[in-house]
Image 1 (spheres, rainbow, N blue to C red):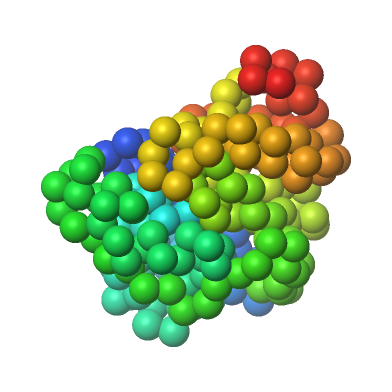
Image 2: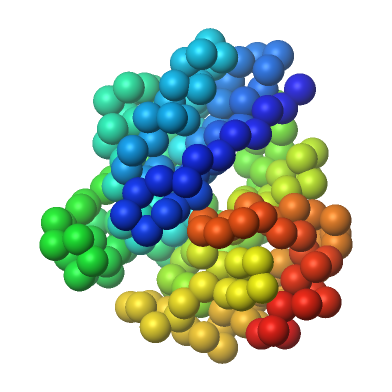
Length: 209
C-alpha cells in the first residue's frame, strides 16, 4: 500500500524521502535538498501528487529545494517544528551563509508541536521534537510503516552534530534516550545522512549510549 523511496543528493549527501500511498496516489516528501529531480521523476512516473513536505529541521541542506518543489506543486504544504521555524528565514542559523555563501530563506505553511499527531496520505504520523542538533528538530514516526524519519538526530552508530547555532549536545543525547529509544526496537530509522538503522540496534551498539 505504501511505497518508500529515497535519494541522496546535494552538497553534503542529504537523504530525502518520499512515501506514496499507492491506493490514493498521494505522497509525502521528507526533506528537500537540491537536485531532487530523481524523487520528482519517481513521483511523476507513479502518477502521484505530493500533498505535504515534512522538514526535519531548518539547515540549508534539508530545505534548499523547497521552492523548486513548490514551483512544481503549488498546492503542497510545508511543515516544520515550531521551534525550528525561525531558523528557516535566517541564513546564519540555517547555515546557508557559512557553508555555501548563498543566503537561503524559506517560509513554512504550518508548524508542528512535540507530540502532535497528524494524518496524511491515509496514515497517522507522530511528531517527536528532539532538540539538540537544532533547537526544534522534528522526527516523524509512521507507526503503520514501523519507521521514523529523524533528520540529523540519530545516525547509524552515531548522532548528529551539536556545535552549530542552537545545538546542545547533552539535550541531544537525553532526548534521543527519552523520545526515540522508547519506540519499538524493530522501528527502522531513516536518517538525514548515511544508511538506515533500527532503534534496537542503536540502543545496543551506538557508542554514544
